[in-house]
Length: 371
Image (tube, rainbow, N blue to C red; front, side, top):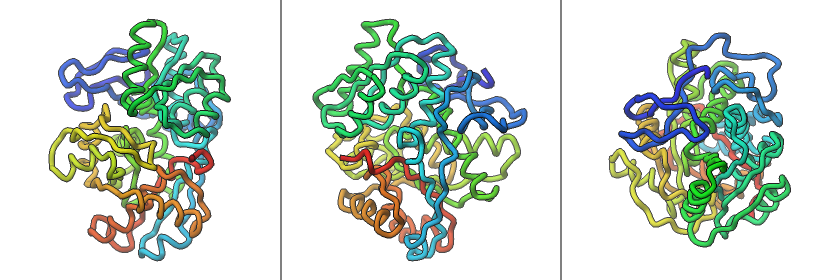
């Protein structure tokens, strides 16, 4: 499969399956580690599948995801004396970065014989899974919190997926999908937060960003974090390129969370290795409202290994950043995407990002799906 599944904490090997088991000692999801590259790029392959050396081996299922624009900041960066570029992930087929993960996840699951897929999602991951499942001809069932964005739910329905609205907090949707998969053995839990296959797909953003910058690494990457897949995808993508001798260092990764739900940022402040248990409150950044991220320890390890940091933002700061991105940069994003931009000033003020640094901000999803 072009690599192996291992525990990201202890390194124990794992078993290939549609639903790989968690590490029996560390009780965390497994991660895919690619083999040494043999011709990393595949010219002519669809979308981000040109970086297939980063993924488990599978027949590519693509809607043209990847190859998203890199947009230099016109006003925000100069105002902060930083070289800021935005990676516009809202240009992906379903409007968010989740398409990178879903394309690889559904490709691998189809290869392994899955016939019915399920996931829990506040919206973007559900839309991505529904789209790629439709492309593969596989039925999909999405368990969503009852307060999810109506526009995102309409998009999921449009792909023909079966929507199950779950009362209560975001965690209730996770409990519901796990119960459904336990009751119906043929229903595969295609978890965007836990599956190593989804995470592998997100690693393409690292190579693509490096190429977009003409083979010059950014100094810093600022990332919204809920389940942490995007931050980990960047970390493992850059790590693979460094292991293959393509690059000699990696950017510092900074995790941004809403103060209303910040298990990673609170753990970072406390100097502990596990996410801090939190009582998640409502937030406009619904995409990162994950109170118990399955890969929490892995995220904290990646932050420390990259020399990065974690911080929180208020609701007002997030909404102001969303407004500034639209009015100063011409980029309309959902509030979750705006959290990374909102963190820039704080990171500069604290000295975590020095004047003149080159900073990449992935804008994770289009604002056309908010509300």
